[in-house]
Image (cartoon, rainbow, N blue to C red; front, side, top):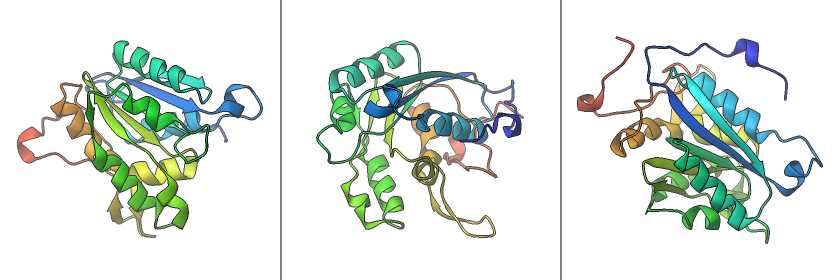
Length: 208
């Protein structure tokens, strides 16, 4: 992946500062067999989507269920309002990210996984094999994402036509309001990149 850091928009200091955990789960990438592309994809997408200044807590770990659960707990305890994982959500024997995520859950949020699979099914029929889940632990939202950067972008941001008109919302459209409801920071998205939705009574922009 090319370095796009110079093209990323600056944050807006008037917005709440947010701590975000990003976790790439891969035996081969964590052992150095190949370059991890999940963490850069997550960081770049979130930086483009959010006005908020963000502190990223990044972890690259193998497909070990106990370690994944431990990492998620540590990130929540460290104050991450949002934790995104990538990788380890298929049916293979070593794919245990959903099990590790559910093991630390206080509440399940099945709508996120349902929407991700619906989006991915527009591209490949094997999307029905994906097992991504989303959960709440304490005041943090944890979401499993696919392993490929292109799939990460599609599931987070949804689908647009050639003119940039939104055809199908991605899951991130619902993330800021979910974090509101569980007592987290107020996330503000750049509408031209990824428009989030809140009821009118919940809108309280820090930038106005």
